[in-house]
Amino acid sequence: MQKQQQTDSIPGIIRTIVVVGGGSAGWIAANRLAAKGARGSDDIVVKLVESATVPTIGVGEGTWPTMRNTLAKIGIGETEFLRSCDAAFKQGARFVGWKDGSPRDAYYHPLNPPAGAADLNLSPHWQQALADTPDRDFADWADFQQALCDAGLAPKTITAPEFGGVANYAYHLDAGKFATLLHDHAVDRLGVEHVVGDVTNVVMADNGDIASLELADGRSIAGDLFIDCTGFAALLIGKVYGVPFRPCNDVLFADRAIAMQVPYLTEDAPITSHTVSTASDAGWFWDIGLWARRGTGYVYSSAHIDDDAAEAALRAYVGPQAEQLSTRRITIEAGHRERFWEKNCVAVGLSAGFLEPLEASALMLVEASMDAIADRLPRTRSAMDVAARQFNDSFRHHWDRIIEFLKLHYAITKRTDTAFWRDNAAPESIPDSLKERLELWRQHPPAPQDFAHAREVFSWPSYQYVLHGMGFETQYPVVPATSPDAALARRWIGRMERMRGDAVAQMPRHRTLLRAIREHGLQAV
Image 1: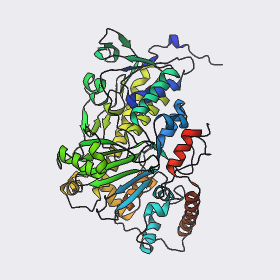
Image 2: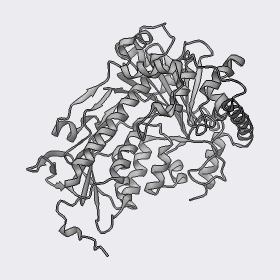
Image 3: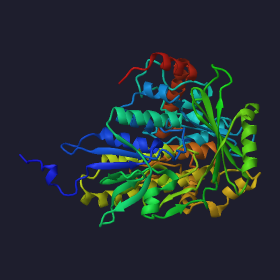
């Protein structure tokens, strides 16, 4: 039998991981690493260093279904999460006014894939269905989740177990309360050492690694791996290592956001179970439902509207209630680092990059980063450079694909009413990779073969929902009604019709379910 080598005799063993910065990103990182626990005999110590004077951004309120896995991995139950974070369920996004700005202009990007996605591609069959029923939406035809959203229904019932439901779902959450929950869980249950202090100096090792951090009160925090969650300051990846920032403001023009928290007018007001993204003259409004309030805001381009006019537009969108409410202004520097893992430092969260929150990718990228780090944590320093190259390759791809997918929403618009929309559809602002795909997708629908990367953040179903929702003109070959594929499509659509009826009949109102969870809880798993 092979004897396991004692860790004391392994040179460069990774023992202490230091997360620098708090907020959602820092505390997700600390929880994921601490929950990973001891690797055999290799005990990992996780420390989080957080300034008491630097505020967090705290407006990332939308998530992906990946958050369910993250909560389960770190040991936070869904009931506890929903109660502690004033959270609600999210079943996708509804885009209003993006296609042409007409009164009926709206479509969904649900979280469920189209019916039968593992068996067939419904897009060619949709072309014929659209000819027969021109007022039908692709998302409504291909899946039942839009019907739940339109009816204000939840994706699950009170009898469903935690993290399980009839429809796929994510969450809307209060970012400040979420950070508090993550802090308490990491410190009280997972043994993360919370260090409060301002970093005044970074001590470097001879090989270019970070050796330790010096704090304002004289303490020194040594580590073997450092996770930079210092937000826009990018204290380590930017200021210490000088890794260049790659802007994408030539593709995505939004560089400002104004946020406003809007209380419900009544205690029983409906809670939407999807994000609403409403196009405006120089950007778009977000509107998401939490348990006790709505989170709203305006993402816009300062080249197309000034800040005061943008705030006036947001207040007009919210209505008379906005007169008594305050706002918060945020600057968006769209882009990402050229490298995310440098030496023994990894940038996670805003220190890695930031894009407008059109598809709520910010927290997902934090989760994906920590999955890659925690699940493939190098045992020794000698293995770290290989891990860094793999990480950098993967996440450059992820960021490029997210930028491309966000641009898709603008690139195929038919709106020409303002300079913002005309500029966004200008060919010179569209990445070459997206131009090539759009040319292909006029003749052939998005398919798995178009996405060769092992783990795409947005795959072909997401592109289908946006392309068809935006009315992208296609010239797909007609599928003969007598073909096996046509028969399979009819069976799936028939099955979807039955699922839609059953789901609408069985699912509770969104607020009703959230109230029941707060009072009684879900079945723990």
